Image: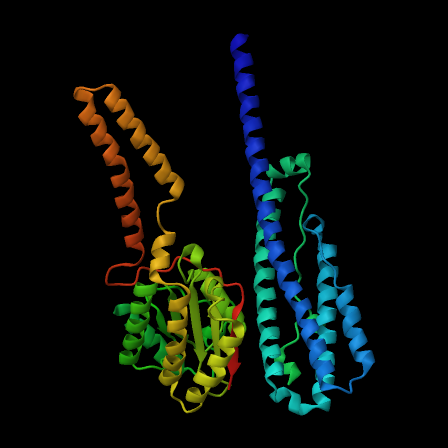
Length: 194
Length: 256
C-alpha cells in the first residue's frame, strides 16, 4: 500500500520533470527563432534606408516624374514592422510582400532615371548605391535562411509526439516560414539596374 | 600531400569533362572542409603558387588569428556566388569562434561563361572591410589582373590590401587579451587566497606553511590552464583548423 503510493509519486515526479524540461527546451528554441527574426527585421530596415538613398539619387538627377517618386514613398510607408509575437505564415507573407513591393518600386524609379540619364551610372553615388543594394540583399538572404532554419527546428520539436502534448498545454504555436520568392518578388538584382 | 594530389586529380578531371555539367554545378554541392586555407577545384594555379599562397595565409592566421580562405571553383553548387560563399563560411566556421574574423575569397575564372569573384566577410571584420571597400578591391585590384589572365596577381593584389587592414582591425594582442581569465574569477581566487592566509595565520603552527602553499597554488594552475587552452588554438607549425563562422552577408562581388 505505502510502497505503491511512493511508486506512483515517483512516476508523477518524473513526468512533471520531463514536462518542465520539454517546455524549457521549446522556449529556448522559440527564443532562438525570435532573435533570428530580429536580424531579419534589421536587414529589411536596411533596405528601407536604401530607399531613402534611391530617392535622393532620383531627385539629384533632376527633372523626374513626381508620380514615380510618390509610388516609392508610398511603398516605403506601407512597409510594416512585424512583432516577434505575430510570426504566423500569413503575417510573414504580408511583411515580405510589402518590402518586396518597396524594393520593386525603388528599382523601377532608379531604372527610369537611368534611362533618362545614362551618365548617372558612372557617378560614385550610383556605384556605391549599387554595392549597397547588393550587400543588403545578401544580408536579407542570409538572415532569412537562418530564421527559417531556427523556425524549422522549433516547429519540428513542438509537433513531435509526445512533445506536442506539452506544446498544446503551454500554448506553443507553430511559427511561419519565409517562402521562396517567386519571380515577381525576387530581390532586385543590380544587373537589372544597368 | 595526398589530399592535395586528390584535389589536383579532381581538378584535372573537371577540366577534361568541361562542357558537361560537373558536380560543382549540381544543386547543393558544398566542398568538405580540409585543414588548409587554399582550395583550387579548378586546377588553375600551379602547385608552387598554391603552396606560396597557403604559406602566406597560414602565416597571417598564426600572427593575427584572422582566417582568410581562397577558393577557386568552376561552380557554386547551383547557387549564386554570394550565397555559396556565405554557406561555405558558415558551414566551415571560417574565423575564430565568437570573433567571426574570417574572410573567404572565391574566384570563378572566365571560360565559356563570365568570370566571377566574391569577397565574403565575417561579421567580425565587417568594420575593417565594408562592402564598398570590398567592391573597390574587386573592381580596381582584382578584375584588371584577371582580365589579363593573371589570377595569382589579382589575388595577391587583393591580399596586399586586405591583410594589413584586417591586421589593424583585430590584432594578436587583442585576441590574447580577449581570451584571458575573466576578472571575477581572478577576484574569487584572490579572496580565497586571502581567506587561506588569514586562516593559516590564525592557526599558526604547522598548518601555516601548508595553507600558504595551497593558496599560492590556486592562481598558478588557473593561469597555466588558460594559456594551454589558447595555445592549442593557433600555435604550432600546421593550420589549427576552423572554428568560427557567422557570415551574415557582408562583402561584395564582381563579374568580368
